[in-house]
Length: 296
Image (cartoon, rainbow, N blue to C red; front, side, top):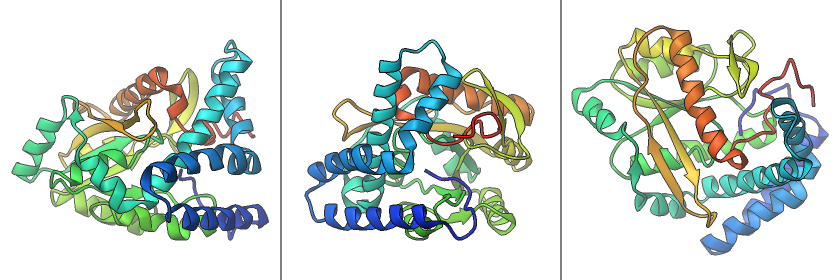
């Protein structure tokens, strides 16, 4: 749920942050299962309309798939908001979420390669998108003694960002804020044989234009560039929410073969697109992925 911080925030940001703080504090009193379900409901019914998330999600669905029915777009937008709410409170529920993910089987062809890299001291750059719960794989790997740090872009709501970032720090590995200093720290961590995750599905002003869901999208190639520079594995991973709304399938996919930054980034994009095609309601459609094309 991260987009670049814009100034000091406005009144809408402040109000949303205060509503979320109250909701989070109240729901953390509840047992795990009703806590997750209620936060999904609250974001879908209260926060998403206030923040115009569903309107923005529908506009983006219009942009990428104009032939989709209105009923399907509305359903996806509502489910996106519900998933975002569940993801949010899961990430604030560190002990309970960690215990749940510790029992989750890790699937995919990339786990063996990651374990081999760990044994040899080779760095690993995981790449993912704002899909399902993006912290589920970090928790599942941490339970298997594989520490995964991360490079994050601050949220557009600075009031909320100030405390949400702490949820990332509690999971596993060092966390670096995007920027010159943070990127240098991230690079040193990978160069020394560490592992960390980087999101690549946000609009990037200086990025390479790569098709995403059929539309041109400026995309950062920095993950591939660093993987090539430091001889690190580039591994997509995803946490796919199951139908019960509480559990996850965690996939550590086959590493992207070294070639050139643009080709590797296109392959990363295709891996994410495949997940979105299979579960469109789990990608955060309210992010301004095509910012120059959709001002919503």
